Length: 242
Image (cartoon, rainbow, N blue to C red; front, side, top):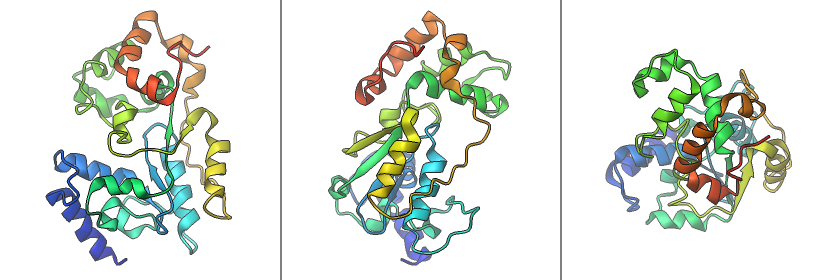
């Protein structure tokens, strides 16, 4: 499919809502950019920030490419990349996306996902959006984000149920970030002989090992209550990891 046609399809999907997805332009644009579909239409992957998102999608782009991609390949402009967007399918209605036989995403324990973002992100880049000082502590950050609605949340800390559009996509499998490499490699092997994982990890904080040092009972309560749908939907215990 030629890039100009893909660009047009993207614009049409986001602007006119031909599938009846509903919501505004920004929601449809986010959906169209977050969902990655194989050219054979045999799998669908949805990115989920702070859950090995870049590593997963770049590995999948290489898996389906059918040609050698540059080692430094990036898929910022989706219409030049092998994996398709929902708009490329020209679906008559959005629910038809669930006809794709295998739909998956990577999820993560909400406690460590939030802490990972806080420890890794440059505070000056998001502090003003939250009305906080760059010198904020983790308690300040959690107090602010747990007051937001899902629509107000940045995708890097947004409730995962909504971040991967569980209200639209009926998933067949969730890979747990905590067991990412083994499970992701198994999924890749279903769709091709190449199972090379193109890791792009940068400045990893190992947040899962720093839970006790950063969480208080009150912080944990706020996360547990605000992200309750994530704990329930993805089978994570609400007890703090040891």
